Image (cartoon, rainbow over all chains, first blue to last red; front, side, top):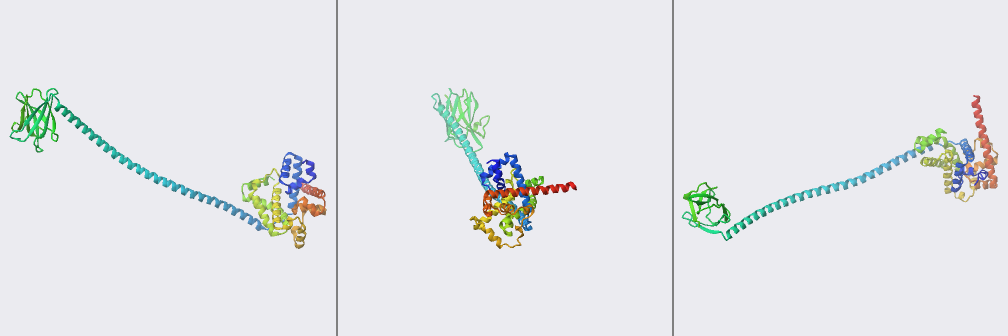
Length: 260
Length: 184
């Protein structure tokens, strides 16, 4: 397709009128870009055809323009409505999203409550464990004490003395275990009659005529550890006011035994 | 031209005001072409509206480096009208152009819209008819030469000669206008 052929065949006229097929159109378009003379010729053709059209113009009725502009305005409105509609859709999606968020929040709150409840239960369990630990410790201590007492009692060097009750305590009896090697004294109070709340039994050692305090016999336990006193000649038990006394109330001596 | 480029730019930015101005400028010429092709004012008015709706919707596909805005609208209008005629008149699909003759016979003599004006009226009859067939009746060169019953080459020569005479006439009229301006 050369310039002469285009001009002779009237291809520019046909191109202008829209008669050519897509391939031919493309070729002409490319030639118009590259060939200034052809382009100038085409521009004249366009001007002439436009002038021809304008010379023969027939004014259309006004309503055509009015309808056209109304249609365009309606289309713009519809577009806006569609946009709004899509906004509504997005609101709908937002609603779903909000519901999901609410559910998640409710779920989280429920889980938080559960967590707190578990924490409280865990705290209770921990406290109970602590209590049990304490009890075990106490029991262990008691056991250790008992074992220590048993060790003392069963020690080969331990001597056993039985303090029988006198007339103030005819049915009472205390068994004491004295070990001069380990310097320990243990008494079995199982057969001591129970005292009122205002009094305690107190034990004394007689050293060269002087009564030395060996301690108050504790209530509630069968075996009681007493203070070991050197050179004791006898063991004595008196009834004293609650908490014990500095000096024995001799009138209330309930039992005694001489040591070997 | 500068103003028209600005208007086209505004049209491409979807400003209704620009469409209104461009409609005022070109609707008459386009309506005339559609009316001469369809020979029915109601149909032509619908097609004119349809054409300018496409101008509004497809404004961004117009490229001023490829041609004038009027040429672009003219092609849209021509295609729409031909599509309408093909769809609604099976006789045209069979290339039987006698339909025009039969229709012309029924159209009132008062149908002023078929009259041509301006420089084209001063052309010789066969030159005038050649332009009328391809420009105002939407026929292709191949259809038109059959319609005029002359060889295709001869028909192309008619078109070329007619356009040459039109160019001379338009150049003269511009010269006259320039002369009047100079005298004034």
